[in-house]
Image 1 (cartoon, each protein chain N blue to C red):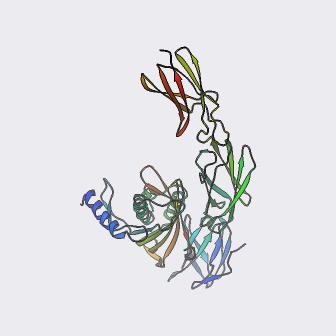
Image 2: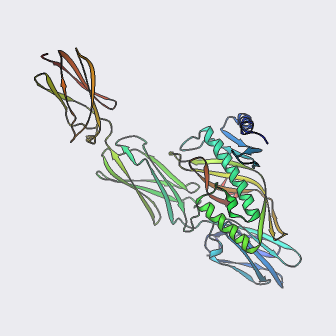
Length: 186
Length: 277
C-alpha cells in the first residue's frame, strides 16, 4: 500500500503536466483517503478557463476535482449495491435527497445499476464572488447497465452530460445538485 | 400539457416523448400484445410494474418530478427494449438568493454582489434563461432596479453601494417569485477630520468636530480615533472611541507639543500647544 506522501507526489506530477494555457486540473488513477485503504477514483479533468465572476485558485480546483471524483465513486457503489450509506459525505441537499430516494426505490423493486466510469470532463462555468458556490458542466463517459436481480435489462453507453452545483464545507467541496441535461447545454 | 417538444423517439415498441416538463403526466404508446414488465428509472424515482402491451401507459406527474434523463425499459418473456427521455424544469417557483456582504461602506464601487439561483416547484434548476430583476430599495433615496438573465440557472449582478447609510433591501424577482435580503450600509472612512484644543492649566482637552464620511454620514459610535502627542516627554498615542459622534481626549503637556489626529487611514489636522511645565 502506497503512502499518502507517495500519492501526493504522483498527484503533483500529474498536476504539473496539466498546467497549460488554460487552468486545468486532473485527478487521475489512484488516490488515497488519509486513513482508509486505497480507492480507485474515476478520472476527472477540470477546465476553469474564463471562470467568472471569481477566478479559481489552483488548490481549490484540485480539491473540487478530487471530491467530484470521490462523489462519483460513492455514487456508483451506492447504486450498484443499493446502499444509501455508501453515498458517503460527498453529496448534500437535493442531490443527496434524490439519490437516497432512488436507492430506496431500487431496493424495493429489486433493481440495481452498474456504472463503468470512464472519466469526466468538468467545465467550471460560475464561481460566486464570495466563493460560496460553483457551477460546473460535466461531460461524462459512462457505461450504465441496469439489472433486475441478476438479469441485465438495459445497457447505455452514450455520453452523459450533467450540470453540477458544488458548495464548500469545512474540509471538502460537496455536490449539492446533480442533474443530467441534454448535450445542447454545452 | 403533454410535452414541450413534439419530438418522438422510436424504441422498438414504444413511442416516447423526447422532452417532458417536470410534473407533467403523459402517456406512452406501446405496441404488441400480451403482458410485459415496465421499468421507469429516473434521477430520484424507480417504477416497476406489469403492463398490458397494445395500450397506452400512463406516466403520473409524480413519476417525473426530478429533472434529468429517464430510462424506460420494457421486457417481455424474450427480450427488453428501452428508450429514454428528458425531463426539464418547470417555470421558476423558488429563488435561492445570496446577497453579499451583510455590511458594506457607502459609495463603494462594486462592493455588493447579488446572486440568484432559479428553481422550479420541485427544486430543479431552471436552465431555460429567465429574467431576474434585482430591486434595490435604500432606506433613504430613490430605489432602482437592475435586470439580469439567468444562465444555466444563475443570475448575478455586482453593484455599487449607495451614498447613504442604513438598511438596503434587495429583492430578486423572477415572474411571480420574490425573495428579499437586507444589507446594512455603514459610513465609509472619515472625511475632513478636524479637532480643536481647549487648554486648562497644564492639561489640554482635544475634541474632534462631528466625525463624518465624505457623504455626510456620521461614523458610528465606537469607531476609534487616535490622538498622537509629541512633546519634551516623548511621543504618546491615545486611542479613544467616538461617543455621540465626537471623540475627546485630555492630555498633560510638557513644553511645546504637536498633536495630530487620525481615524483609520485618514489623517486630520495638527495642533501646536505650549505647556507651562
